[in-house]
Amino acid sequence: MNHKEIVKEVHESLLRLRGIETVLSTLKFQRLWEASTESERDEAILYIRQHSRDGLARWMKDHSSFSFGEMSSRQLVAAGKKAGIRNYSRLGKLELIMALEDYYKDKK
Image (cartoon, rainbow, N blue to C red):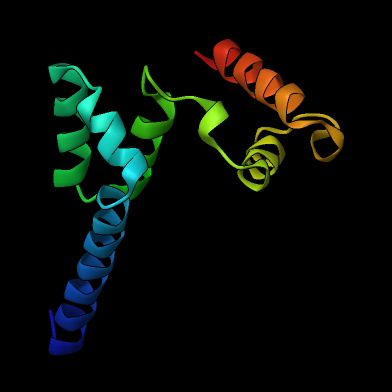
């Protein structure tokens, strides 16, 4: 491994850690952490140690105390688009929350 490869590897590792730090500093993560069981915390710690921001985001989304009601309308529309919900952009906030809850309930 040459010098440039080492520098690139360290840089990518730092970027992953910064992403994790950003997630950990959010109020949403703090609230979920406080509401977590020990096994849920262990799972989050595993994602943190693996430097997996995506895993941590999934942990937050799948958390037992997660609520779509805490999301803004813009976030809900983005989630509806990502989930492939029909007419997501035309639904009201409550309808979109219900559609997302149904979608993710069926995924579990």
